[in-house]
Length: 389
Image 1 (cartoon, one colour):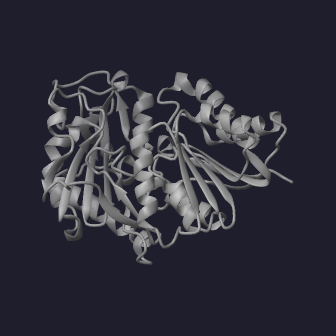
Image 2 (cartoon, rainbow, N blue to C red):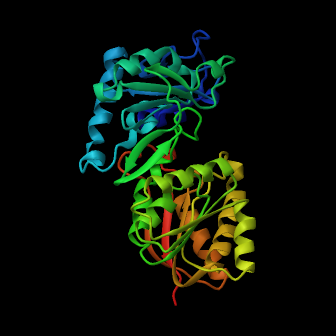
Image 3 (spheres, rainbow, N blue to C red):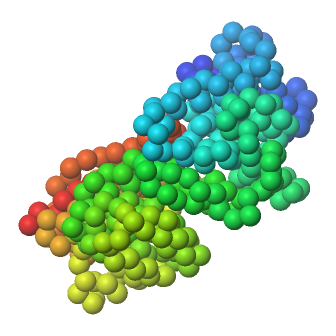
């Protein structure tokens, strides 16, 4: 292993890339435990091996040797679960991230909870041999129904494992859950991520608190998380925009689930490309008091960062053109490759260039159930800003 990679591992970084390995004792299979030695053949770390991934070893432990067995996995899961108590302490939320991969010491593994349903998502084939141990380590309240989902796993039979029930039966449809007292549904079998974007919960709550009596535009609305919170917060009008008609159909159902709380809101949807729809709204002379822009990741690779920043700037220009004087812009990025400072600078610069300088009121990041344990783990950033009157 290269000296730089060894230094990073000893500093707590969870990834060893294939280019950092100077020698491999034997080929190994996905899920094998790989011991990392330093140049003096001393133990440095141990992790899960995946010969099909550029991240060849995902570090589970570094320092002095320890046995990695079922009990070790159970202890890690139990510790992560205990740390999420603050999310459910008020009893109004029963959907959250139980295990946040590398940031909880279980690299490449995500476990999300939707009431009594647990969704395990593996982002490397290295976890498949250990799924039984992971399931056994779940607390009793999460073992009523367990669904397995796979990320982009380089395995020929991956489709046979994606969206299967490990415990209980697959749901006939979506799974209901609560977020800050509001009712939602998640497609835990076929939906994006594990069925819902749990990481934006705190920002959605914040939007709900500032929506009373205001007209809200929710761009990249997906299944309507921001839209529902805005309506429940007292928005007079909410327009949800997304290129996916099925996602907006779910947004309508989520709105209907909260009929008593959103009765005073006029809700409309628009299916189409965000850039095009926003341009059309501006051309029609429409304006809004709150514009939420929460796009998908624009940069999965480093070389895509300049293009991503241009896209964020373009969205900002369109959004501020639609803001009424004194209106609030909420813009987010989930691209881990894009640094927070670069994102915020791009948004503020684009607003100034459009003649609508921003007064930033808050910059937010990850909620408590999405802790940050290493630099690449800090992917989510959002900005709340007002266009002065």
